[in-house]
Image (tube, rainbow, N blue to C red; front, side):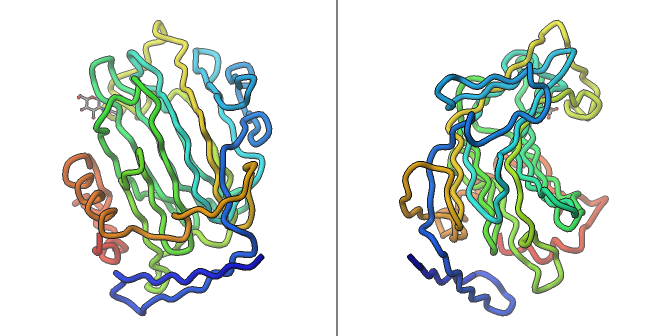
Length: 285
Ligand SMILES: *[C@@H]1O[C@H](CO)[C@@H](O)[C@H](O)[C@H]1NC(C)=O
């Protein structure tokens, strides 16, 4: 059952990239089951999975936080999860959803939700590590209170682009610019991971506001994990899916610009103290 998809990166000012991806099985999708598809990796007594495998909670108290990871590692994929962040005063608390290489050479795509005092907003802190180098922080405020409800957070990672979505709105992209020497993660599989931990040394107002343990336990909820891969599926049914091999279309770029203009708090590319050289290769967004 072979399927071929042509992708062209239209916006690249460099050599036009034309890639043929032969997908040996249909793009596949569908809901993961936390019992079947993930392992709790630490804080076992601080993690709970509902009987039907659809809801997973991680709890942090003075004794421990907790984390889980997918049983399998994936080379490229689209990973969605709905999260509801701990309510109340969560200053110092970091709740995460990310993908990380399993073998040597640290590569990672990272969403970290930095807690805050009760009436102050969470910050979404993102980073991309390629060939062991990170320092690519971008931070965002959200247009809703992530403590109130479940919202969908997505990491899309294909050979051409990494896109982070919040409720299907692109907030961050990282284009493959290997052609001009910027490392891109495209050889090592990654596992999907999530955790809650005490980050009071840096998380809230740069570490000024510490965790208030009187507010513990802090509980983060994860549901509707979906894993779409090119090579196979953890889901029950196979059905072709749209976005895995695709970059941002015009509407997507417009939304991204809106996020950057109205909700971006920090961008390493605009940090006058740092001036990362690679940023001149990311001007097209
Ligand atoms: C917490 O709230 C303060 C005040 O609104 C804000 O400056 C800060 O960026 C917020 N987030 C974090 C993680 O400190």
